[in-house]
Image (cartoon, rainbow, N blue to C red; front, side):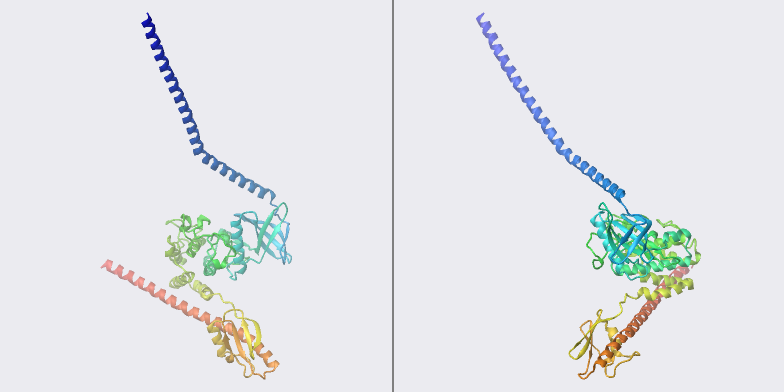
Length: 493
């Protein structure tokens, strides 16, 4: 009996020990599960918190922009009847005539009753767009080309409630090219418009400026005029020398209207060049005749609507190349090609238009020489000019082979150059005041005469270069035609 009790006691102790071990294992597993749950929750928090942060940021940014837009709309007090002032004039707003991007355009009348267009930009719109607007104003203020819009005034206006605007004043034009195309453009007028746009782009491109948004809505006309005016340089790419303020306006920026954009503008990272504007201009040339914008290969040809202008299809094909490096460029080559094609077709009216435009298109921008200062130094009169004196200009002046008046002994052949901008006229020690005064007056007259002779000389050189280029192109065409004729003959033998 005692042995049985001992056996039972031993079994109970063993059982309790196992139960204790099971309880300890259960506790360990429970703690491990709790730790795993904590690690899981921490990991999920780590994974989801960036998403939540991004969602919150996006939602906040959208809300901020919506709120900003609502504020701009609700507090914009620009309206007809309002008067705004600049340093030299006052303008009364008539009514809004256009809106695009972040700008609004109003017609306005100045204090003399003249009509203008005023473009306003919200001062709080953002630094990048403000800088673009500043560059646009700077270029158009200093532009001197008949086919580029001119900014004639600028200013800043604060209305109330922090409603602030930067604005620029431009001529008010009667209609856009889009308006003209809706009404129908005469075929010869279409070509003249195309040539005017070529000249305007040539001026801009020579200054390192790419417009990047050439389209009918950005081409304007004065009343009863067919002279095109290129407007809205708001997204143009400016060269450093024409940049009023530094801005990241890269050639790879995608900003233009896709309907008239070149292939490189539609590609991510595509680089815009002057040929980008040429592609857009080619589309407009075709559209002025066909009333449709070419897309792909199956486009409507000019020949299908104007057989006598079928040669323009050949020109268009060279502007419509998908590779910008294969497009016909620069502008003078386009004009030469157009002239040669028109002559081959016998289009005399077109040839007359080209003859009238050739000299001005090729002639570089010339700033006339002027005397801006004078002084008496070392027994000589020193004339200070407004710019560096070209060698050919001074050769004409010094040669004196033009009709002019002078004081005896003080003719133009006595002049000598001093540095790049100074022309010296030696005087005698006994020269009286009247001699000095008359010599200065005659020098001013000589400058005007020589300016005219010098510009005429440059124009003659342009004509000679143009004739040489045309003869070269005619020879190329004749050679190609001969090769085609030979190949056709051989195929028939």
